[in-house]
Image (cartoon, rainbow, N blue to C red):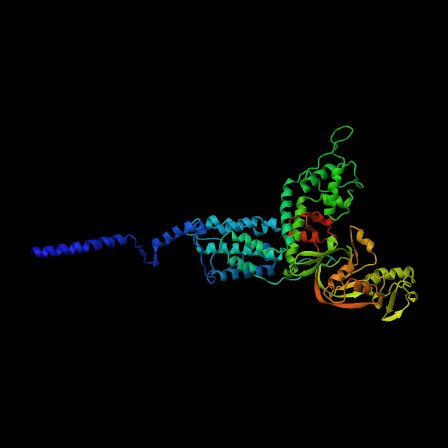
Length: 602
């Protein structure tokens, strides 16, 4: 009996430690939800740990995966952009590619609410005006209005969160496409002023960058990467930020149009002088104090004093005007532009950089800025040669396009365009049929040589297309001593001119459309610098040979004829130029359709 009791006691002593160990371990065992087959407490514990190390998950919760077969990606693009089918298709493809590459998971929103990625997107879109775009095009207000409804229950309904996330992604890619390709997709026809914009190849770099984003702060870098790489673009963006700030400082009482009778000269008195003094003080961030009358000792606010004259001269230089200190019609028009209008012009010129092909920033190229009347040779964004040019008159504008110089003609002939035969030569011959007798021209009618003095030019039904007129080589040739050929169908090229006095003028929109060079010999030497036998002496000899010779270039140089009415020079000075062909006015209406700009007269 005692032996049996003692045996049971030993068994009990053996099992007690095992039971204690079992119950101790059981405290760490997570109950299982048999319906979902998932650890109920484990999910809560992991979320709590992640919230300490992942601020995005703490804020937004878990990102939601979705099935596009059940929840197809739809278009949430604002109605204004739905009018542009090409743009909408481009954005929608990017959206689909993005979600495909990221496994169809929400980016901006989680099951708890919007995350830090959304905050960063919202901040960047609010600053779109500092990138030359309109924040209203990417308004998030309609989506944010839905947050309270979607997240009033926890967890939120997945399908509703997915819908909003897709709309945010569409807005991002709309913004990204504008940054890369421009908001104005098709440059409109502007009368005879042609602007030929080459289509840019499709690149989905924005899709790859967004898909690879891991931290919210990376979004700022992505937006910076998507914008043009040109150094000038970055300078314009900085200038735009300054002018947007100046908008807030500009006095409400500043008159829209500064009009005076005649001109204001140094030491004159005029009622607009106080406005000009205030405007230039804001522009230059420098106080131009009122002068004191030497006789009375009182302030003379209406006096156009020497200090203000110096400020006006600098203003005139920045606007491509003769820096004579005399305030005339064009100076007053530029002074009358508000900082708001100037900021819009800066934004427009940033937009134009988005239209340029990517190869524009690579290698060597030639750029003619029409409103500046300057040709520049660029090598890896560094200027190696610059000279003044004459461009097409407002009624015969130089087209904005890109081409390449492929050959040089020394001592060229000039075949007179039919438009000049009709508009200039025939009217002149009607007054004097012998006018061209000693002017080195050859006349052909139906390809037969004729004597122009024997023709009946007074016949009103005369057909100019029957005639071909060729000016022979020589110092008086309209093309000068050298022509630089480009193979375009518009018959636009670069050339010399017999009248170099015109290069001293500040307004040089004077040609029939082609671009005249002030230093054609230097330009020829540059183009031929890698071809043996074409040094300075041989170039000069060929130009004055009196007989035409054509030299094909071994290396063709890209030529970009562009239209920049605002830029920042190497000294950091913001420059503006006259809108000689009206491109600014037309394009500003598209870039900022809700605004009415007064640049029409400039």
